[in-house]
Length: 265
Ligand SMILES: NC(=O)c1ccc[n+]([C@@H]2O[C@H](COP(=O)([O-])OP(=O)(O)OC[C@H]3O[C@@H](n4cnc5c(N)ncnc54)[C@H](O)[C@@H]3O)[C@@H](O)[C@H]2O)c1
Image (cartoon, rainbow, N blue to C red; front, side, top):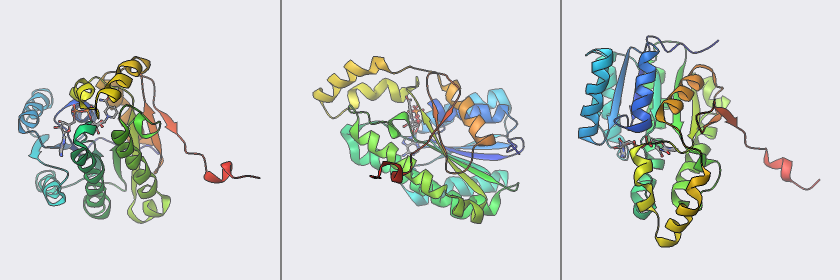
């Protein structure tokens, strides 16, 4: 049976821009009761709240200025969600940056931020406060988390980490215990502020050259396509699965072959 979004509560990290903001919009269009935007950028957060309130009314959206790299700080967004909406059913670990030049921060946001979110969501807030029989966590990886991008090797590593964690936290053993599905969504190139800044955020000229040579090979899409893919997997995908949303196509599952299939016979 498909997961019912109507009446549920969601928390979206990095919800002030791009894919996160669009996901908030699509969830609200599907009847979500409330959403918290856990966003580090105050201007973006406030602007996003206004945009969503203009479309959906004053009581469904909250902005909590949050830095996901700090677990206590991230937890404040969970606490505020419960205080205001009483429940939490859906977590989208979306906050991310693409900047191999400042790789400490990139690893902190893209990897530790997701660790913090999953631990808070899976082991504490969603099991305690879900309003229905099941909860869902969607971790935003990337096509760069399934296929190496040589122009952004460190970003690639962070997104492979998100995929690996999703597979492990999403194992049926955890689902049985928590009743929470953990999924990965792996978008292709998507028109957002992140993508606009990525060219100047590589490790240096050799990487920029690769970027120039290869970026045209990737189909581009708008944020709506990613958000619609997110809705589909939230409703129907099995725990531990990863989904590619690229070029505006319907999402399709990315399956890791079992390592035994490569072993000599
Ligand atoms: N745009 C693409 O082509 C693309 C492709 C694949 C995956 N992704 C992933 O999608 C996610 C969203 O990216 P986007 O393209 O919408 O970018 P974006 O820059 O439009 O949005 C990301 C948001 O995250 C916020 N953020 C950054 N660091 C944060 C932190 N420490 N705590 C809380 N919020 C923080 C930013 O302020 C921003 O509002 C990222 O994880 C990104 O890696 C993007």
